[in-house]
Image (tube, rainbow, N blue to C red):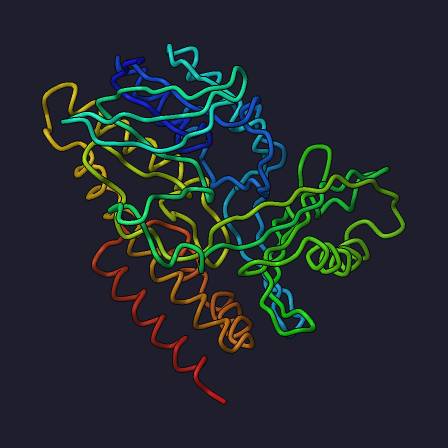
Length: 398
């Protein structure tokens, strides 16, 4: 049985960041990644917040497009435009692959084609079992600290403190085309992130998007709950022409299809168990209104690394508890409110337009909603609640 100080399951933004930053501080770290190539098979629009590369010490070469504008499209067909600073787009292959390469440079061992199967407590440590997909058989690793960051596929045994009964209800079936154009789209395409909120003919709520990339456009959609591939493909085929007519009319293209389950529910209530921590999408750290989760995932990886390093240096005896406390203080207030807001909007989808119009009228309010709430001042909290009250009054009108 192998033994390491820190074992990470999943090499996405959460797991890769945690491994890299822990190893940089001298922690013996290993990563289990189920795919043979890090970053493969990720259905993700891959939008990055302004300053993401600088914040996480990543090369700007991974950025495809600088996109200062976000547009929201509701049931009315109106287009609402917002300034988001200089956001960026990339692909998960480049993002995850770059973080993994930097982690390896810090001494992290990344074992690919390894499928996590479960964990058991072993005194103050944890034993993780995994399947070796290359060579066959089961193997075990004993670690002082474990971070589970396996995305929306995260599953835990019945009775585990990490189990969350509402997890299945928060899953979103997603389908995306990578659209490779014969000639470039109109210039504005490459400076804009588009989000669309509408209903299918059967009345199901849809979130759709268009994010520009260096050599293609990511155009996709998500529907809450399970949905057949045939139904999703038909819905995306109906949505795509509306984008094409605006952004690349008459231009030929080829597509690459991608499909997967993502998460859009409330955060997982418990994200630590003994020496085990849960991060990123596996912890439910996704903004239900936009699907954003890369910033939250990378931050959760950083917080996990900080807790493990603090334990190594004798500054805490309960790193997993410290991790849970610190991470909830950063994200849970905002993400829980976003989940409630999304449920409120979906009950009467015309409310999406009410919200977008309110945000367009109050740029300060729109700007605040893009920030994490742990850095609000008292005055900003008062302003936030006042604007939320005004929106609620308008949203309840007939």
